[in-house]
Amino acid sequence: MVTVRALLARGNSKLGSAIHHFDLPAVRTCPGRSSVCEAVCYATRHRFRTDPVRERLHWCLRRSRRADFADHVVDEVRQKGALVVRLHVSGDFYDAEYAQKWLSAIRRCRATTFYFYTRSWRVAEVEPVLAELAALENVVGWYSADADTGMPECVPSGVRVAWLQADVDEPVAGDLVFRDRPLREAPPSKVALPLVCPSETPAGRRAHTNCGNCGHCWKQ
Ligand code: SF4
Image (cartoon, rainbow, N blue to C red; front, side, top):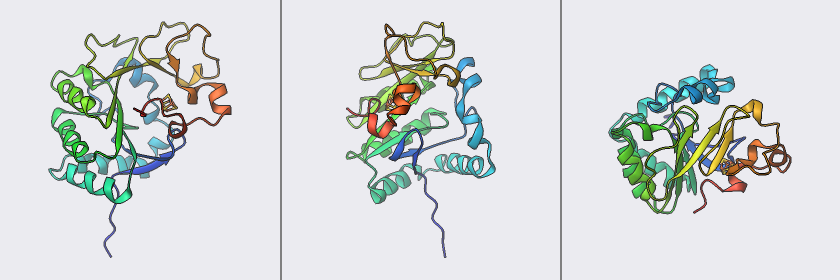
């Protein structure tokens, strides 16, 4: 019997049960990483350090390098009827050729919404492909920023900026704030703008907020 392994996984505690995701090994596939994001990266800790997860992420990376990667993504999205796909719970667009493969796949999956956060906007050869991806009608693209990267000088039309806050006194910018875990117990400042991801606030956790029922990052 042939076991067919899936590229897309479905659901986790942050995404909820319905959102599919495709993931890669963190850090080595993150050419735009900053000192801040690498220092607090959740995808280098806890379950991401277990052998089964590490093995799966490396398998996904090998598959992503194949010429038929986009074709397999398209087949799977259709077979699973995936309505929403998050790219890279772990990992990032590691080069332009890989990002082009997603461009090819997503153009063929018009009924599915894809969304991503990326620091690969800091890599000159990758950024134009990210802008093309984000311009697709069924894509929501977020550029990730922090105190190390600063705000991107140029944000393409349709792209929003997600700020990673690692220090409680740090000024934040962009359209959405993610907080490093030690900051999540504190309620957001009443005057703070932009929105703090509700799954990372005490009130949001009490309300069982996840990406599926929130939708801020992927609803168009
Ligand atoms: S703002 Fe909403 S959709 Fe975006 S990461 Fe937070 S919970 Fe998920």
